[in-house]
Image: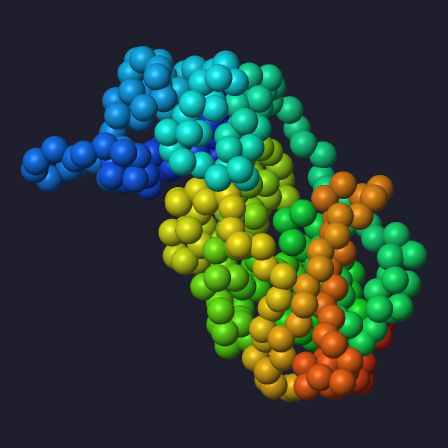
Length: 295
């Protein structure tokens, strides 16, 4: 299952609808009238009034018919919807894309990892580290970088994806004590990527699979959140080494668009560092050789 391809303006409309239905009248400074409101969040006419645009114009935007809103209109809608900086920028990006969108076949993303990056993965040991694609496919790793996600090594290399792991692997809820926060962050990241490149094959394949197989993913996907708390530390409840809390740093890699280098660290001499070292040692002994790895 894959999401349908999107026409010009459709993703902009989808984002506006999602944010409108999640903005309460009271938070927008309106006093709800008597009776039960059938519309969750703001009504179209309320948002149009708050943003200073005609109801007809806004309705056409939300139906994907108006694809060239001015920057002033976009900024007014962002203020009315109380978007934060990241959401505001996402709205701008969607408007730019709607104005210039021309359907074209997107190239398949590269899965190649340069040799010096594989060397770097070994250099940072015992810190767990990996290289992931923009859709969170695990493209390369050192022993701890894979072992940290307990059970993911049972999947073929081409199926190892951190988003797929969070939603579909039975061990994920045990490994992450704050699993709900982890999945919200994951969906927000994928939503932001898919919003400005919704027909990219790497994203549509993963999103389609998760929509089909995970009700938790589908529920969060419908919310269309594109921001979340930056996760700088992660706590793992690992079946081999117990609980460990590690600092996380992700970095974009030059020369391979969308690829990122992720590394976990802990202060030397702490129990977390000891557990990290034990994980690296244990994973080294169980890591298959290249000839043993599944394709």
